[in-house]
Amino acid sequence: MGYWWDSNDTLIQPAYYEAQYLRLGSILRKKQSHRGPESIRMGEKTYRFVSRPYQGNLPKIEKLSDTPLKTVQIITEISAEVYYLNRLLWSVGIGIGVGALLSIIAGYALARRALIPIQKAWDKQQQFIADASHELRSPLSVVQGQTQLLLRHPDHTIEEESVPISAILKETKRMSNMVSGLLLLARGDSHEEVIICKPVRVDGIIKEIAQNMEPIMDYKQLRLQLHVEGTEFLINGAEDRLIQLFMILMDNAIKFTPEHGQIDLECVRQGKSVVVTVKDNGAGISERDLPLVFDRFYKGDSARDRGDHGAGLGLSIARWIVDQHQGSVHISSEVGHGTSVTIRFPMLVR
Image (cartoon, rainbow, N blue to C red; front, side, top):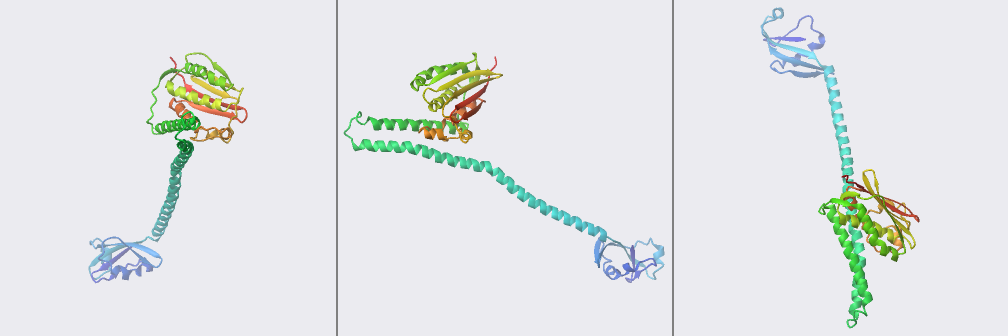
């Protein structure tokens, strides 16, 4: 629709004007000088208009006025557009609000989830410190107590005080082994401990360990069943660390196998892998303890019942050595029927 104003600011109204637009005249008259598009609201309806100087191209309209035309205003109703635009703005606003709320909730959940490993690492470190302190306190207390006993009799000979001296030596050795194990694991965690690998014959190491263990097996009245299937089982590894690994497993087997029991030491080839198994028929490990045996300082009920004084680091070191050789380790056990430890190494094929 159009509005035309003459130089006297009089509205020139053609016959086809509708009555609803006439009420806008008083408002539009004051806005003739406004050149930009504007919106005005009247009642529940919204209108958009623009004002422009008359260019002299409407002769029919000019005949309706005695004075020259000055301004032309074009106006249209945009109520529907405004309604849908407001709904869109509300939808966008609600969407932004809901999105922000969901982002906050999701961010909080993800942050908590991301903190779980950190919290577990912190708890593990605190538990590690507590366990290390506890394990070191016992031998230190023994050394301190035995030393005080020695000082009460400074005139005694070494032979007369051989018992406390022996206790001090035993606990000192225990602490030394514990500190060495802790240092190895700490250096392994920080990747400072580097294993230099080269081709190594696992079957040769197994046979050597079995031979060296014979006196101990005889002393403990145990039977050792050795089974090496084939020769030239080469893997890429460090011989000293592999010997340490198998000695840890053999030591545990001997420790928890009663007199007249049997330990099986086996080395076989399975596909492209070398599999070493250490099996005993000793006390076994409970189903509750089995998932925890590789944790540092962890001791199962069988170790406590036997009064074992180990630090609980052996299997942790064993697993670290296996991991360094790109191998895998699996333990199966049943209380009263023994334990089987199976280690699998990738084999070098010439």
